[in-house]
Image 1 (cartoon, rainbow, N blue to C red):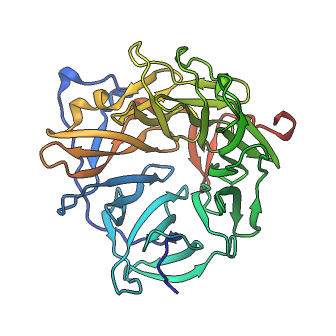
Image 2 (image 1 turned 135 degrees about the horizontal axis):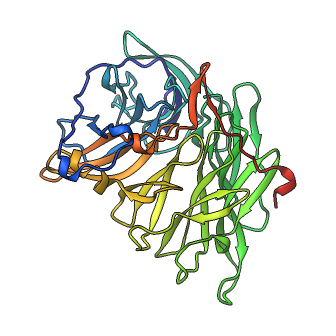
Length: 415
């Protein structure tokens, strides 16, 4: 059953153990301004004695209490109550070798995970499974039939854990799809003027709004026809294509040719992504009323920036700055803020921060990656940032609810 392949998983019921201490500094002279005088907290949540070369925190629960990802080829789960658990998979390939694993998406309460088993780098159909809480063993493994014989990739999962999104790989032409537990696979609308097809990369809480990209054919600077990516939103059977030429507030000396949408908020009303050329890129935030807007500058300087995640109401966005992958956080009120500078008083010595990869629903908890300067060992970090908490977003009755109503793009407004 477990042939050499990459098998995607939806994983629930995780065993967790080993609490790690919060690391914080009390340098009052450099202390940032904080809401209600509550100081930020910084925590290193992965400890790896093998001098990890790569550590990625890839997903976070809505309340920020659960984080998933991988250290080198080993998946991990972290919670505030139980600390970090590295997930040893009791499965071997045909050569009787242990396999690697990663987690890259979770549902809103941190009970269902989407991940992968790394065998030989090839792709097979996704799998769903459960973890036996007391034995750390996979159980109830069942294949999710999405495409039959056509290879596919799963790229994301809805917040309620009921919908997967991704794309089918059909001879170099990608076909976007959603897969629901009750409805099976749905092929999304595709453009016909580009040779590369389309891909779904993310979705909202209930799977009703999907974001990604489509290839289009367009001429630039009197060149021959070329294929370029366009950030794309699918909703209500319609397809909205976002042209990078229409981005507002981006550096005027750069003419962006491509764009991708990578994530959307709880109700699908706010989409984030980035526009790019061969040597420059800038993030954007899109709403129906405001269109595509860049994140602006940092201290008056335009930096390359790429968003990675968005909070529930779409008011807090995190990602990486420039080619150095330094983490940033953005809100409409603060603009771009360097998290490396903001958290400097609270970092242990010899630590450097890299990209921010996830944010909680209220915007107050951020997860990212970093390294120790001396050994260059990689780690995953978590930061509590009370100043960036969105007061209008809260939890209730087993699901996330927002005080503010927002407008979804509809078929009438789609291109």
